[in-house]
Image (tube, rainbow, N blue to C red; front, side, top):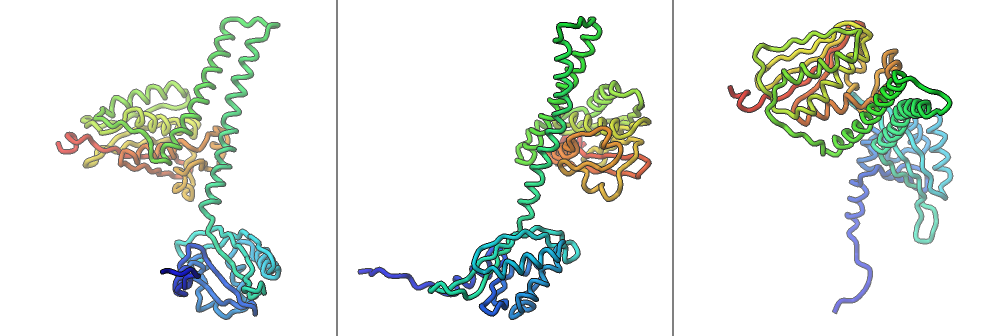
Length: 368
C-alpha cells in the first residue's frame, strides 16, 4: 500500500531546467558574486559563464552597461535594483549588436531576492527576457493607429466639408458646382475604401490567408488596360509600353496582378513630378518579369532593402508631399510572393526608380 509524502526530485532536473530555460538566468550569492550563469544569458549578453562566474556585482553591472545604448543610466538602475534586494524590480534595456550580423535587441530584466526556508536573504537573481518582438509589435500597432488616423482624417474632413456645404440652405449652388462637390466626395470615398481594403489585405497576408484565384491569363491585355486607366490620372507624364511580340499567358489572379500594377504605376506618378513612365515585360525561362520605371528623384541606397516593409516610407520631399499609408508596396510583395514570384526595386538617386516583379508562366506555356 502506497504511503503519502513528498516525492524525491532528482536535482539534475532543476539544474537542467535552469541551464536550458528560454530566459537568461543570473544568480548572485550572499557576497554579491555571480554564482550561476545559464546559456541563454550568454546568448543575450554575449558574456560567457567562464568570464562571469565568481565576478563581483559591480563588475557584472559594468559589463552589462557597456553593452547597452545608455550605459550610465543602465549602470545606475541595475546597481539600485541589486541594492534593493527586498523587492522585485523590472528594468528595460536596449542591447547593442555585439558581432557581425547581430542586431540590437530589447531586454526585460526582472530582479528578485533569493531566500532560504527561514526567510533569510541568501542572494539575488535576474531573469533576462528578449522582448524585441513584443516591442516591435507594439511599435507597429502605434504606427498603424497613427497612420490610419492620419490617412482617414483627410478624406473624412473633405467629405464632411463638401456635404455640409451642399446642405446649406442659405446658398443656392448651380448644377456644375454641385457636380464638382459631389465628384470630390466620390473621390474621397474611394480613397477611404482603398485605405480599408489595404488594411484588410495586409491582415490577410500576415495571417497567410490572402485569397488568390490563379488562372491562365493574358498579361498584355491587362497591362494595356491598367496603363490606359492610369494615363487618365496625370497630365505631367507620358507612358511607354514595351511588350514582346509574342506574349505567353501567365498563371495568376488577374484582379491581384491589376492591384500590383496599379500600385506601382500609381507610385511612379506620385513620386515623379513629370516625365516618362515605362512599363515593360521580358520572358525569361518559365517566368515573365514585369517592370515599371519612372524618372523621379529615386530611392537612397540605404532604403532599398526596407521599402517593402509595412508602414515604411522614405523620408523625402516627395513622401511628405503625397503622404500615404506605407502599405502599398508591402501588399504588392505579399501578392507577388503568393504567386511564387518575387519583387524588388532598383534605383539611382536623382535618376528615377525601377520596380520589377515576376510571375510564373502557365504550365502549357512554360513547357511549350
